[in-house]
Length: 84
Image (tube, rainbow, N blue to C red; front, side):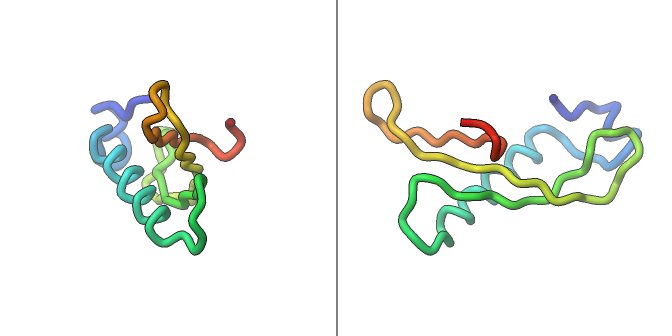
């Protein structure tokens, strides 16, 4: 769900672009610092829950998988750990 202006007014000022930037930078860091060459890395980050009152970040985990696209080009997919 998109982080709206109403969410920023009620909680911590943020925007969707900034949140996406944080996910991408954290994913790039996880890929660069992984100990073994691998197609999948775990991405640990902190996020503000969208509950209307929180302003303290909580840990969140994602996974990033690199695989072939339709034309065998590398494609990076970022998802929840329980997704395939």
